[in-house]
Length: 365
Image 1: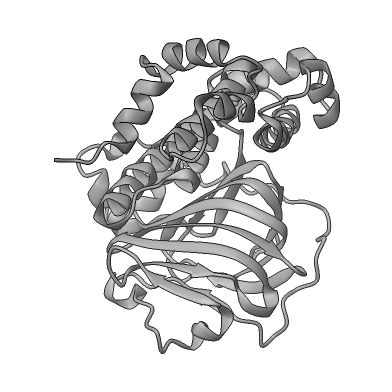
Image 2: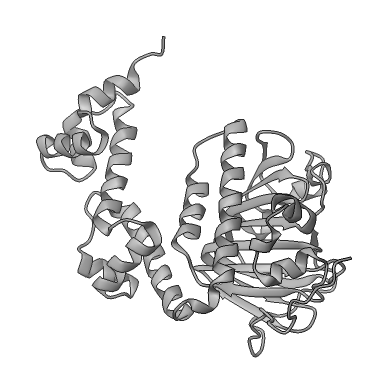
C-alpha cells in the first residue's frame, strides 16, 4: 500500500454550534447506497413502492422516476445508475414536515447542489453541516464509517451524485496527481473520517442543476445526457474544492444566489409582463446592481436576455400548435404588436414566426 504524506489536519468539516433538528428516531430508515448497478435496481414489488403514487422505469430498470413520496410529502424524484459505483439523483419535492433518516455512503464521494430547500447533517464525530439553499456541498466518506444523521425540510429542488472510491480511481486513472490533496488521500485509502464541506456557489453548478431538471429527452438519450452532466458536476465540484479558500464571502454569495433563484421563479410566472429591474430587485432582497451581477455570474446572461429566452421558449411552443394566430401568440408572450414580435423571433431563431410554424408543423417525410 502506498504510504501517504498528505496532511490529515486540513479538515473540511465546518462544525455548527448546536443542531437545528432533532436526531432521527432509532428505528428511522437507513439509506444505504449499494455499489453494483444490479443492486441499485428497484422493482415494482419493492417495499418502497408504498411511498409513491407512480413508478416509471426509464431507459432501463436502473433508471427510474418516482412521483410523490407518500405521506412524507409530494413531488418527483429521479434516479439513474450510470455504472457500478456511480449514480446521479435529482428531485423537486415539497416535504410536509422535516424528514430525518440515516444515510450510509461508505467509501464514496458525494456532491450535492440545491437551489431550494433546507438540510442538516450530523456526522459520527459530532460535527454538523447545516445547509440552506441555494448551496453546494461535498462529502468524502472513508470505508467503514458509521451512518450520518440527515434531516431535510421544506421545498427541496436539488441534484446529487455519488461516486465510489474505486469508480473515481478508474475515472482518474493516470491523472490522480491532478486531484486536490484530500482526494488523493481518499483514493489511497488513507482517509480516517468523513470530511464534509459547504462549497462556494459556482454558476456552472447551478446551471447544471437547471439543465438536468429541464431536460426534455427520454430513453437512452436522457441517460447519456445525465451521464455527461454528472461528470461535469463532479469536475466543477473538484475544481471548487481545490480553490475554495480563494473565494470571497460565502454568505454574500449565498444571499445573491437565493435572490437570483427567487427572481427566476418570479420571471417564469410573469415573463409576459415582467416587473422592472428595481421592483424585481426589491422583491428578492437585492440591489439592482447585485441582481444584475448575480444573473450574469450564476446564469451567464442578463435579466433581460433571460426574460427574452422565456418569451421565445413559450412562443416556440405555441407556434408548434395551430390553435393561436401569430397576433395572439405575440400578445400572449408580452408583445403589443405582431411586427415587434416578428422582429424578436427573427433575431432569436433566425426565422420568421410563419417559417417557424411551418417547420414545427410540417410532417417528416
